[in-house]
Image (cartoon, rainbow, N blue to C red; front, side, top):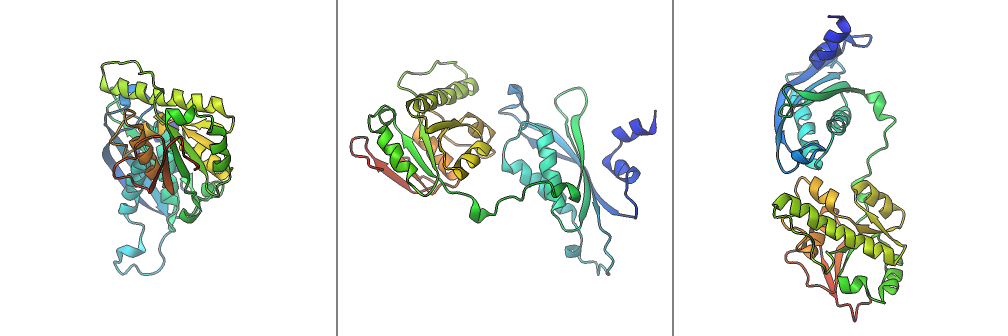
Length: 309
């Protein structure tokens, strides 16, 4: 077996040693760190956890001053495991590649880190370990945009529209008023009045019910071109920064959330309240429906006949 093939399947520690740049670099490693997590793009991987193994090597700048046996002066193993835990808690992901990129980036923001090797493997999806391995250095961070500071993240005004509000002749006037607001606006709707098909299975019914909400979102979009249906956080962030009125299609964000809602599409107002808290909205305006219990954000209520937003 050639040296290249041997290194391809060797532990990241061996790859780091074989590809070390000029001059010695110290290394720390975390081997065979196994976590139970929900991840994957296939339907069979949703609603269940699987074992995922992490092997990470971080090359660090040598410390020239005396350590004095002080843990605060080194890049600790905990920083590596904390990076893994933080990214797993951020959101449910489909791809190991995305998770590896984010873990590597988080590690490389540590002042001592120079280069990192991240290998992630699914242990329960086949007869062997199925995974990816990436190598990233601090130079790679220079091409990445800086994450926004918490104070610059927009806090949108979320509006839940009942079906009566969606079909109201006042819709255009309400949208005029919403456009005039300083903060971004995201609209939420429930299912149409026609009951969705029944599957007799909890997980598939959840999908059908969420898709029924999305169908109604497209109905709203068809009533006014200012209403743009969006289903990802990236699209929502772009829309909020560019003054676009968004209509939330909930399936992806709900299904990908690590700490998902306790309610489903059968209670769309409570689902909109969860969403408002999830995106740190400034408030939730409910038009034509009963307000939710114990909402995570302030709630205003208007009826369709008298609402002036």
